[in-house]
Image 1 (cartoon, rainbow, N blue to C red):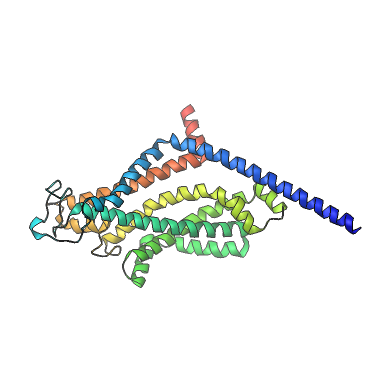
Image 2: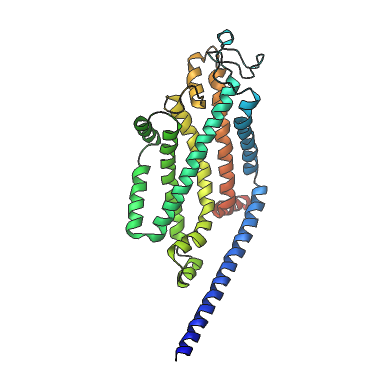
Length: 319
């Protein structure tokens, strides 16, 4: 009798392992095929290619620009104040204190990209975790996380940033924390909706039937399928982070002197618009280029990974 029971248990275990192997093989095949199609669409997406090219230029300006121009954004020269662009040794001219505008703009781009990177990492990690837990576990967990997210989402971004900066002091860290918190709420809302849909899919039901734990199902079966929409949304909020940092720096709540910021440079030059408009115009153009590059990348990624948009575009073309 004991031998028969052990034989039945061994057979059940063998069938379970075989079922697990088949499920993983099917998921891997679908993932590889979908990845190949996505890469092919990315190579032919003009918005994504244009945004990537512009993004490489902006990134190179932020990383290499200060080194090429000398990297000294603090030294003042009162004999060379308000020099126009293309002056000798000053490709973007100088400001009211004789400081080189080119190196200050390039360092400002670096500051904006640093803030955007910090905000995006914080929002992606926290938003994905909170959205997955709320969407899969549901119940009181979903209500608690959802209520907190809705509470944060109800605050205007600038107001929340002002509260953080007022409580923690000026600088980039409070800006990253405040903007990242709002962006976390936005990403968590989208991820939660995706997880609610994925939880009803056949491969998740099969994993539950196989006796897998909730943690394994979320990590192995749901997590890979929410990365695309999360990254697409995060690319949009990179632009939001750049604009928020520039706005806070414009009113003196972002990067503190002597560290230059694009918003701070626009604010410094606004008193000389009639005489030397380039002191605000050039940093403003830099903000536009940074935001345009990440917006084009976000639109391209959305076109690649959102099948509903592709079907709508195809229908329009056919008409």
